Amino acid sequence: MKKYNHIASFFAMISGIGFFLYDSIFGNISSLYHGYPNHIITIVCHGILFIGGSYLFFKEKYSPIYKSNILITMLIILSHGSIFATNNIKNSTFIYFLVKPEFLQLTNSQIINYTILFGYYFFFMILFRFIIIQFFVINVRYHDTKNIKNQTMKIT
Image (tube, rainbow, N blue to C red; front, top):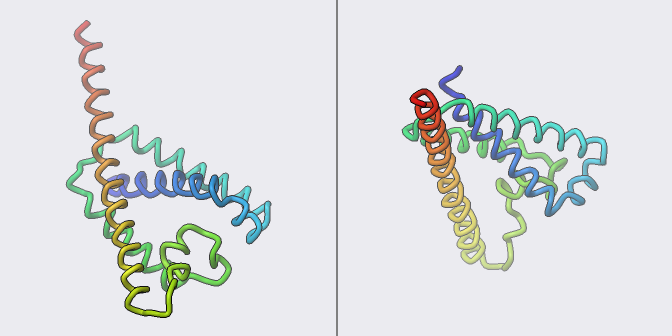
């Protein structure tokens, strides 16, 4: 299972960061839909995900050759989300806005709406790819710097 730690670290960190960014901007919306006790549980769970993902990130060095694993996993997550999205989360969670962006139906023209939808998904695809690349770049730099410091300490 250790060979999948880069996937666990990435998605745990992205889930934690994404939730707290979303909650910072739209927190009242989520708590209105799900109630404050569920909202508090969600905050705790996403905090645990972020801390666990960060722990793995700083513990292990990940090779950038496994970037495609993260893309494949994201496609599986989005497929699952689009199939099993329920009305319970309608217009209240970030993943819902990613999977079912009904708010983009701005005109009566299907061509314009599909063009907007394509642009929306294209933007998120480029952003997601950039985040994946940065995940590996920062991880490798951190561990290379850590190794240089450890070697320097051994010499002196």
